[in-house]
Every structure is written in C-alpha cells, then in structure tokens.
Length: 630
Image: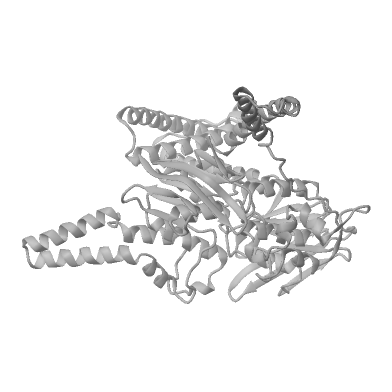
C-alpha cells in the first residue's frame, strides 16, 4: 500500500543548498534509514515530511487519513508542565474523542432514539480511526516500559535520557501509520535501545529513521536512503548490505568518470582544432562534449576527516581509586570501588541511565569529592573530558573564535604546528564555515567542534561521555580510527554497541546500588556471557524442577564411584543444550501466541514444539542420571 510521495523537493539555508529536486516514495512496511554527513539536511527533510517545516520547492502527497508522528532529535517540551499535564496536552484530540464517545454512550443509554444512535455511530467511527479503544492500556504499558512513574514530576527536572524516553513514549502512544524517528537512540541506555530495536524489527510499523547506531541499522532497517551532495540513492537491505552496494556503485561510477575524462581530453583537442564554420554534425559533437565534460567532473573529491593528535607524556602513576564511595541522599551511586589504572587501559562504562556513570566520571576528574575513599591521579595526568552536555559557546560566536579562545596554535606532533584556522580545516570546517556563527551549525557539527576543542588540549587521559550522540557515521568511523591509535588511557561511556566493540577491551558494568563490576572484554562478549548465564540459570531451574518430580515417581538409580571420561563430557555439555532448547521453545511459544501464522506454518511450529519438549525431558532425565552417578 502506497503511503506517501515526495516529488522534486528543494531546500536551501542561506547560501547552503541542502538538496534539490529530491524525490522518494514510502510503502507500507518500509523500514528506511536515512544516512548522510552532518549538516546534509537529514533533520530538515524529516521535518518537511512531517509538515513542520516548508520546502522551497516541490510537493508531498500523503494518503488520505494517514497519521504521521515525528520523534525530534532533541525533545522540545514546555518545561513548566508536569509529565501528566504534558501527556494530557499531547493527546488532547485523542482524549477529546474518548470523552465524546463516553458521553455519546451515556446519552444513548438514557435515551434510545435515532439522533443518539447517529451520535454514537459517529463517535465509534472516530474511535476506530484513531485506534483509541486501548488508549489507557497502551499508556500504562509504555509508561511502565520507559520507567516513567512519577507523573507529577516537573519536566524541567528531567535528565536528557528521561526526556528522550518520555518523548519516545508519547510518539509510540499515538500509534501512527508512519514513524519519523530522528536519532531515536540518543540518550537511551543500552537496555532501552535493545527493547526499541526488538519492537521496531518485529512489529509491522512503517518508518523513516535517522540514526548513527550501526548495529541498530543492521538489525532494524530493510532499506537505506543515502543523502549525498543533495541527491538520494536508494539501496535495498540493511546497513551492511548498503556498504557493499555502495562500494560497487562507486567503483562503477569511477570507471565511467575515468572513461569520460579520457574522451573529454580527445574531444577537447578536436574542438580546439575545428574550423569556425560549424555544421549541424559538429554542433551535435559539441553538445556531446558538454555532456562528457559534466560526466568527467561528476565525481568531486571527498573531504576526509583526519584525527591525528599527539598527547602529552604519561608517567608511571596514572590514577588510583581506593574504596571510593559516593551517594546522593539515600541513593548510593558508587560503593567501595577500588581500581588502579594502567597505561593503555581502554575501558567502556555501561549501565542504565541515572545509575551513577556521570558521578563516577566526576569523581575521577575531581569535580565531585567522595564521601569515603581516595582518588589519586598521577602528576603527569592531563584529563580531556568530553561531556554529554556538549559545546558551551554563545550562539553568536564565530566557529573560529571558539577555537582561538583556547589557543591560536596547536602542536599536532613535535615537528608539526597548525594555526587555529588550519586545525579547523583539518576537522572539515572550511573557511566559510569558520566564519559562521555557532547558531548556524547542525547538532552533529556542534558535536564535532566540541570534540575538536577537547582533543586539541592533548590529553593523555581521555574521558568521553556519550560522544556518539548526533555525530554522523563518517565522523564516528574516523573517531574509531583515532581511538585505535590513541596510546593514552581511555574511559568511554556510550550506548553505541558497535562503537564500544571497536574501541574498548574491558568494561566497568554499573549494576545499581553502587555496585561496579569489572569485565574483561568488549560489549558483545559481555552480552553473550549474560545470555549464556541466563540460559544456564534457566536450565538449572528446569533441571531442579524435573529432578524433584522424578524423585517422587522413580526409584533411586544405582550409584557407582565415578563417571567415565565420556560421561563427564556429556554431563558438561547437557546443561547448555537444555538452555538452548528452552530458548527455542520460548521463541516458538511467542510465534504460536502471535495469531499471525498461516495454517501450514502453525503445523510446522507445533510439530517442532512437541519434538523440543520430548528432547528436553529426555535430556533432563539423562542429566539427573549422570548427576546421581557423580
């Protein structure tokens, strides 16, 4: 089913042309990711499609009755409201329909006549149109899912992560036909991202999404729209497939451009030698030359962001934390934490929002004093602290001035010194952008400028608190390259699982109530270990339950002194096999309960379910037999 069409859309900000003659179509079930560099116009395009901003040219055709909802990159709430007032105001039209339906029901119950019957039918039709029947249930479920409990709390007191969760809950509550999601994973913790990932991938929702989260892109999207130099290219498949297709397309284009340049050189010689009198045939050849010339220059060289910054010398002692404890009121943030940082430590920090990660970073940098314990940095340690709050600069300040306030010259290495302007150019801020004010930059460009102001201080202990928010994928890739070469200490807080996997080799896992566990490995290894641990716990519970049941009906098995080598191997493997079977059983149960299976699929799933149950019972009996032989 066709949902909407965008035809010949153009938009320009001041002298900057974002896109021209841009067209796209959206069908029911499309799960589209819009990818581009920062400042290319992604958020502007989303606002235009949502009807919030107008295009300079072009038109958007939307199917009658189609409901769209935009999740903005940064929530814009009236902060003097409570959460309850915000929810009621956000859904004012929907609540009015529910109230009108309730009133029509009561009126019809009191007085059965044609007028009240028509009023009830009209109210029922509006309830159907807005899918308002289960509003209360959906509201309750979403608030619980997003951990929003105190509805009388003022919006102004909410953290960035809490505002993002509230904004996301309100967007999903609308139950729209099309979701427009602008950086939906920003400020969310990993547990919430994984829930949203599962929700979007398993539901039939249609969406266009802007995100830098590459695992999210891979697991959720079925199409990629690449906005490049003001035009769109469409690719089928997820993000990994897009990268493969883009390389092929660029190679083909490069071959065509090379041929066009060779032909252009030949034709240019002819044009310079040709007589002044021009025949119809020669004019056609000149027109063909102009087309060849356009093709030859259709592949401009791409600017490349290069992060190559040296850091100051680091001594023997780096940072020691001994039995550090910090709380706010009754909430324990860090409890009795001890760790000695070593040269080259690359540590990621993960945990739910509000659990103490930022407090921990402030303890390290001395911005917060511990209640107990000691934080002792080495004499040579120079912190570079990239804060989640972002750039602290006036909107009317020029980009160049933001940098020269820190220093006019920067030492990239012992032999290379750059001026502030050269350094900015190094970070893709050309001469024109350097003279722009901060207010004209996109969210991602402000983040890139902020990152520059941290790195130019040459820190040897780099702390990055959610650095991936609003940065485009190109910048993230270059930042990953920089961090892989960085030899100082790195402490990274991030919800971006791909970024964590490619930059750190150990984790501090914040479990709550001040507990911080050290895990040797990246995020994917940690996640896999948690899944296996959960499977083992489930299988152990199942085995204990089955053992209890069997003990009531079976006679004790004869014992022997010890297991054979083969039996020991079987015993070690059987618990994991049971856990895996239990997970498959759970997945099949969800499919059976979904009500979406065709008859043949229902038969297949039911048959597999019966086979799994039999296998689990047999393996449990065997495990019990081996357990009793130990």
